[in-house]
Amino acid sequence: MAKETYSRRDFLKRAGLATVGAAAVLGSAERSRAKPSASDTVTIGIIGTGSRGSHLLQIINTIPGLRVAAVCDVYQPHLERGLKLAGGKIPAYQDYRQMLEQKDLDSVLIATPLHLHARMCIDAMQAGKDVFCEKTMTYSVEEAREVVQWVKRTNRVFQVGQQRRYSPVYHQAMRLIREGAIGEVVFIRAQWHRNADWRRAVPDPSLEKQLNWRLYREFSGGLMTELGTHQIDVANWALGDIHPESCVGIGGIDYWKDGREVYDNVSVVYKYPNGVKLVYTSITRNKFYGASEQIMGSEGTIELTTSRAKVYRENPTRRSEFKEFVWSLERELFQTVAIGTATFLPEDPNADRGQWIEPEMPHSEEYLQLESFAECVRTRKKPFADVIVGYNAGVAALIANEAMDKGEVVLWPDHEELA
Image (tube, rainbow, N blue to C red; front, top):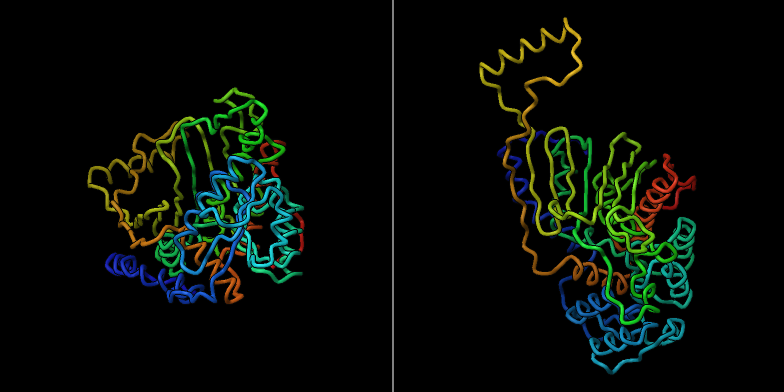
């Protein structure tokens, strides 16, 4: 699409109308607002009723046309909680393979520790079930490739829990980017900062790894796979649904000396084929900046959070006559004298206060992604957050961990195109 030239008035008008564009994408492309009939109800089994699975189960309970028909967890307290949240009158399993034999299940939702995702996804597809898999899609690059192949082979509906793909906020931002509102995207920065140890209390030491699995490498990819894939996916999306070509980074266990094996802080840089860099950080000892993405273009910047976005224009104001005089002196000085220190008149940051984009949000992005999944199961349409989206975000997180472990640049895996 050819880039449009925006005046400030046009820009603000476009930003205000973006709600319509987001509604169109989330409406006509993937789902119908008409209430499904009883015969169109999609049944789903929840594999993993820990904190995440139970949270999503409660959301499913509010979605017309989507019904929980079975729950599964190997940890009895989690299984009992899931069964209670589902109403108590459905089958409950400790072995997910037994659940997959249940004839009245259309689909499954997988919210287990990461190292179990691939096997469960493949088994579910082989059993004829459609799959909603929480992010990150798989524990390894090889598993990610295998899941992609099984989606192709079985032609099942397969959706990954990259829920920002279903947010009206992010759809508005992407529409503005596509239409050239911030010019050419030149740089992306994202972070997810917390001030907590990420550890959960356990009733017995023997349950440490089962309940705190995110802290151990045999089960988890740490901050990159538990948090980073959400924001890597935003960068991929903003750049036209491409993936990075390389990554370098550094991580450490510097704050929480408690026996964990995954990094408690990470800083990575991705390089994309078009030269754009994504700088990503996640720390666990300061939460001031929280979670957000800043997409910087030649003509503006969009700063995103899960609840709203703010758009800034690159309209440099003319310097005062005095500043212009000093600036000209500096230019002449640097042309004749080699000076190794910084200038005494640094560039001022952009003073534009920005324009808020705050769409109506009658439902959360998690509700919207699950509602959309049910509609895809009915219609057999490909989900917006499909297996390739999950592959690109997940593999990017995995090569970041490899880059930090090795202390070197890691290239994107040398695979033929998967799409």
